[in-house]
Length: 213
Picture: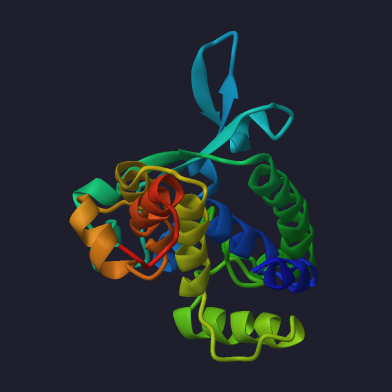
């Protein structure tokens, strides 16, 4: 998905694509993410503080995945409520996005509606799922991989990357907010192939790859 993230750099969805790819959050969780749920670690206080208060001049960041663009505003399940530390790439994307959004706010003037959303329209309102899908398909088209894609592919790619790097399925389930590993295995069975085939690969290494008995 590196071509996708590259093509997204010129898009308003760049930060959203990076966050989804590097943390595995659901598309509805990204649309509901608020700036007061983007936090920085303050070592001398030994606590997380919102970037709306302490800005981005810190080394470690995280997001509180506590809400989703669903009826009632709750996440899909109770287990889906989680705190995820951000990779440096994601933190930098959010920092740049924060600056870009401030410029959009100035341009919008009185039309701006402040809902404190990280990802929003040009006037601050909540993004519509269908608009996000269209914008994402424009990105994938520019990346040369066609339009038969959706933002959910970023979450699938995250699971695939984690699995390929040997991250335990229990950890992957926690990261993506599943109630248990059975859900992860059922939904992402293709992405988990590198882990599932590990046993056979190990046996081939030990006993050789010959088919003869």
